[in-house]
Image 1: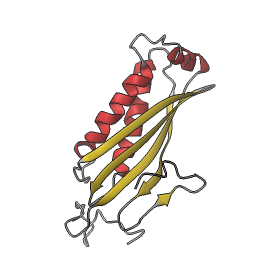
Image 2: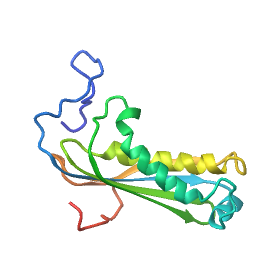
Image 3: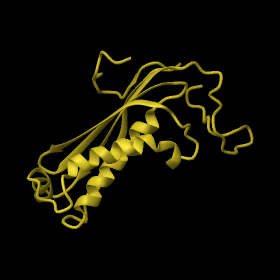
Image 4: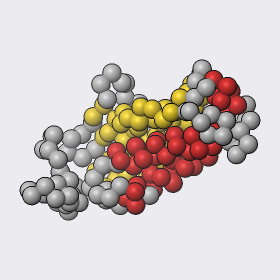
Amino acid sequence: MSGELTHFDDSGAPRMVDITPKDATHRLARARATVRMRPETLARIGGGEVSKGDVLHVARIAGIVAAKRTADLIPLCHPLRLSAVEVEASLAPPDRVVIETVVRAHDRTGVEMEALVAASTAALTVYDMCKAIDRWMSVEEVVLLEKRGGKSGEQLRPGLARQDPQAP
């Protein structure tokens, strides 16, 4: 099934994949997004000098909420019962905020989209909160880092080391 476009039927029409016959397994996905900005903007975030509030804290909350709403945003995603959503947002001097997300569930389909939506939304929240001081920030490198569970087992982005070895 690798490489097959599963969200299209035989005639090419979009469809929601039938996950009925799949077994529920522990699922995990990790994703990352980067927001590049002027060094002065990063300094203001780090110093708590953004008028809208604590940028990294709000970005974390936005990412968690977004992961829970993924099926509302991505038309062919299944609604899932997520068991955990972690969003870390950190300063990466001289000019970046890096967001990493981990999403877990025990379900019949993966949580990659939830992790990617969480990372993307957290990054866009950083942009929204800082756009008045740095309009030309850019959201970059929204990527899946790792997925675990299901028939395909563990998949790790080439060149990365596995994190959280205790997780399923």
